Image (tube, rainbow, N blue to C red; front, side):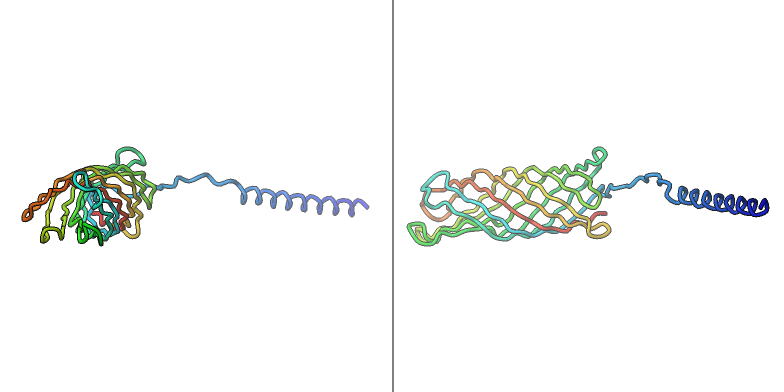
Length: 227
């Protein structure tokens, strides 16, 4: 009887030891891991150049002269830009950028007394500041600054004539850059531009020189290359 009891006690002790060992293994296996540090900052610092294209709409409103020949404008634009970014504080990117674009944003009156009147923005550009948030692979930003453009006014009246003028005003908008490859980012942007008022002087006809207020909205898509 004693021998049987000792055997049972020894078996129970062995089983208890094995169970304790397995429990210890479970505790070790499921011990919580220390949290790591994830770096989500991007590499937006430095100079960049880029190309962009897009679509614009706007208005060429008569400030002086008959208001019936105001024009709604629309068309495409294609340009280049260059700038530089730098880290202002942790997570905040500041920058300066300039751009110049060929433009075919225009409109024409058909019918009525001013039939054949056209207004076309030939080229436009800007020098702007930018402020953005470093989201790692993307950077949403706000932008604003000086804007300028050259436009042509055409009339069929009195035998026809063309008048050119250069406008200077301001522009503001928002966008987001998304990294798509090393040193390459996709730039999506919207801007509103108020180019102010400018007088268009007819060189060859004796007609009232119109003063035109010019405004545009533009959506563009570009590629920027940093270095």
